[in-house]
Length: 255
Length: 83
Image (cartoon, rainbow over all chains, first blue to last red; front, top):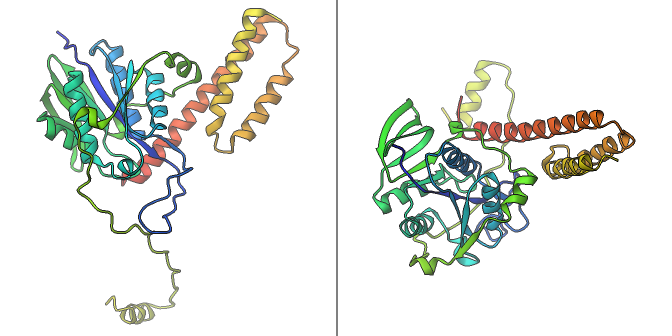
């Protein structure tokens, strides 16, 4: 018997431009005018949710994004890929700058309870902050099992079979529902949100919620002290013989 | 011009325009070539031929989608996975 789970998929709205500049006051990175779109790992999560719905293993896919007004575009992309409806958690200004995995996971936990979700799918990490914490924290807050770095997911009754990509190889686990799953690169190939699908998705609803409505406190426990660019790579030196190399290394204090 | 095919041609054109935004050599580069390609075949009347051209356009669209996916996949793989 297949469970009627309704998953919530979370999307990161992060900057994907290869050219990043540090702000002059070293408090962060310039994000104004930088191209933002859906986090690639989150695209994989959305694709997995839509695939599960197409296999009729789940009832409904809800796409969630936390951020300013522009993050609704990310939700629209998810709707174009096949999600049923969206929830936009409106966070802007200073709150958005301080928004980190802890705050997002609190929001997700509150939403999961509100929506009675059985499955939460996320990307394993956001490519702008590389935290790799949101999924894990959400599972902890809800006291749900978690399957992170999933490269294969299959539902079996009310349990989930997962293959995880870990340093030593592949780990096969079985977890109960409700659960949190974070998607890794090889889970699937996300479909492209084509123009006709985007047009169709305009009819789907996106609800807007404020974190205060969910009873979530967004204060950050972290303080960014400084952000700076990595050191410029110095030019290399060529040496003629091995003896020269040893002399140069000793000079540089490396030997 | 055959009426039902006209809307299909427009849909294809709009779809390719939308896909051109992320083209690696620049959206303008792709858009110029797209416009030239459609203009070249403006006079085609035979519905079978039009259908064949539309099919080729849809093939182009799928190729672009594959290109974008591969580019993203390779970037992620290079950044996060040591091989």
